[in-house]
Length: 474
Image (cartoon, rainbow, N blue to C red; front, side, top):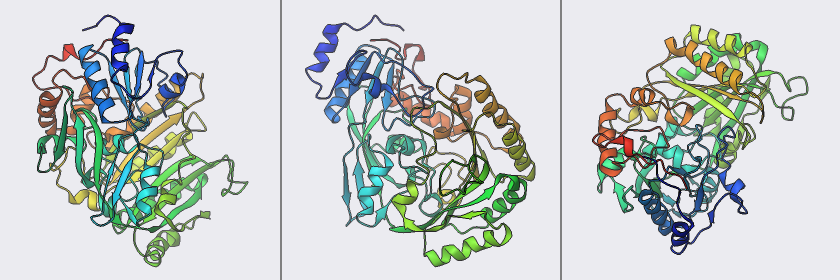
């Protein structure tokens, strides 16, 4: 259903109960507020509601529902498919809500949805504590948590969503509900991997773990050694203890230190490591890899966990266009490694990247049905990430990622890690959740029967007429 544009009178009425800025095209700050990490999502909302607290979020959700607005929800703004922003409709911007409260006695933290992992880690690190985040500090806590949360500490402490204790959620009817194992447990189940389908979380409560420093960094290999080193890395990673998480990344080495001049601008295999245990134990484990595949550059050292979390921040730049595809893999086969090497040689951009992210350990300890997050028993996630310059034709770069993904499908499992994929058609989402999709659909029908929150990896309500989903413009 399409509605008429909202009148200035209606926006004026909203402004009387809204504390934060309400921005429209032409207003100061509008263009900055609408920009998100993925520059390929260059969209212009009709209205940006920059929330400063829970009451602002309540007002914005009720406004969106009353006027049948296409509604985007922005937390950290790092949505790969660009779901954080929309054309013409309402963008509910949570980026000003960044408060966090740490309770060192009970090792918990309560944080608002606009906070990014860099800010979260700084505050928890002050008490020698941490919870699993992702791989960079510029990602928002909200989207990562709701999609599952694979990261450096996953093999030791589980996914981010496994460390969620409770959440305050504003659902589609404009009411605030609390979700935990004891209160609204079905909603709480759905939040841990079901994405932003069920409402807007205004407070996340996390379990923290004692962690100050880690053995982190990377061992780096020249690109002409890919075929030699990749199988050795795979075998090493599969045998590694759960204290160690690895991330293998095929890149074009940046034109800067610590890369030596003859490596800059050339292909490289970057094997990032995080050992969440005694540093001497970690060095002994990594020596097993060094002995079979001597690095061309060894950047591993003991460092604070926040420093490790920011190690890759200078990679994908904010506001540049990107396209990503991803798949799970039980074991990276020799054939899959050959495909990776071949597809890398056909890359289309200096910003092309291929990832192999390790799972296992504590992630696999949690039951498959305990959360919506699927494929817990898998060992790796592949990701094909391609970027291009603003104004450049994206089609060859998107095609490269899709063709690489397709070539790897015979060596991949069903579904996708929802935080890592630019495509989100209904069939793909259903395949990701498998038998759990019906349960998620029933939760969706209870809390968002009209599919107001549909700019996400969307789960359709079980009983609603989805043709009435929000689609109006400001």
